[in-house]
Figure 1 (cartoon, helix red, strand yellow):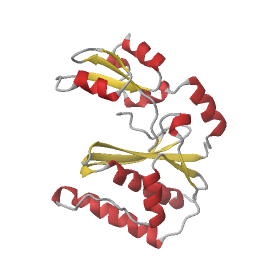
Figure 2: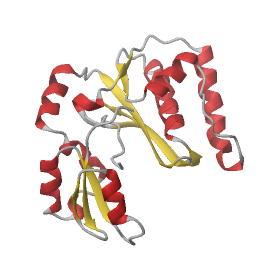
Figure 3: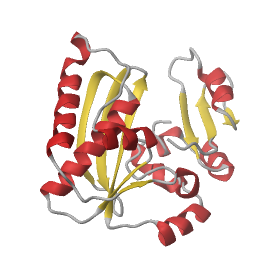
Length: 212
């Protein structure tokens, strides 16, 4: 996943304020019960948010409002909106994981799976991409699919989820899904164009869960 500069607002923590690194933000919220914080893609948005309430920003669906004007211009010019976008979120590595696919233009959720008790972000990105491919084939769609994960693209290309996570009782259901995904890749053909979402240029992918 491509990385981009982020700013962090801490409304409730050891030292509320605006921070320009995750390390500084984490220090302010570590072991603080009920900490309130969120990331933004520009210092201007972060400062604006700090003057407001955390409740105005905690809804994950408001994430796209933090995209800078420059990024919005690039999105309008460069992004193919005849597409869907997929992404995953994992709280821990491993940890609870879920993934989803959305319509790129409207951000309408097309599918959302999980959470699974024990998974990784890479597994989620892989499953989201395979699910998206199957979804488009099922609907006989000519749309392209965006992912922000080079790892997922590589695994799909090799038709193998190359995770180091070991199977156990907690992730049995997840590994069953991985097996199904690998089987689908090996027994199906598709013409869908898989395109890397350019996070540095366009901001977070529309399917992002907004929890960073």
